[in-house]
Image 1 (cartoon, rainbow, N blue to C red):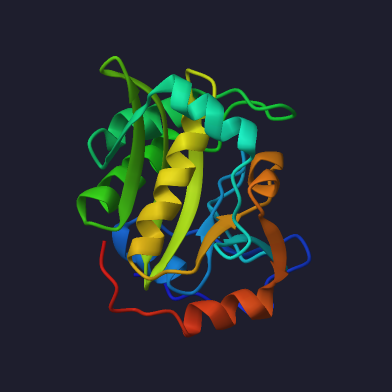
Image 2: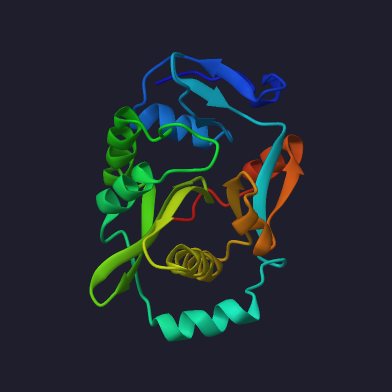
Length: 212
């Protein structure tokens, strides 16, 4: 298992340390301390603790009225952990603006699949006419859910998954979600950035006994 430095020692670019192996043990240790891996081409594995962290506080969470209407028409069905490998594989294929390739490397896919098998990585799936049309996956460690990536093949399918994830977490008495970054989609749902010290304090005071 890797031993990570204090996450407050990360540089201005958020890089805390580099190297090591992507094992379930190292991933557990990292997420329990607010650290996550983010591979960069030509570099050893980089581990991040950014100075500002994206979150959605459920007290700020809101669903646009038009989206509510559109979701009723779409008639999606939801599931949890039914198709994890399919979800992360679809996320790997996504082409994102301003990015070449994908950060979900074959090494990342294999590591997070094992982390899923160990019970710490989870997926949410959207189905339409019995076909997988959207999904997201993330890590649940120490009473904190950290969203990793999402995809959609049908409009609004990934948004539907995010809504269902938050409903699920609220049922478990959680009050916020770690999104790592604030994308336009996250911002539209009420997401925001908080300082690293506040984020680490939230992790330290989370209910570690909560299970998925």
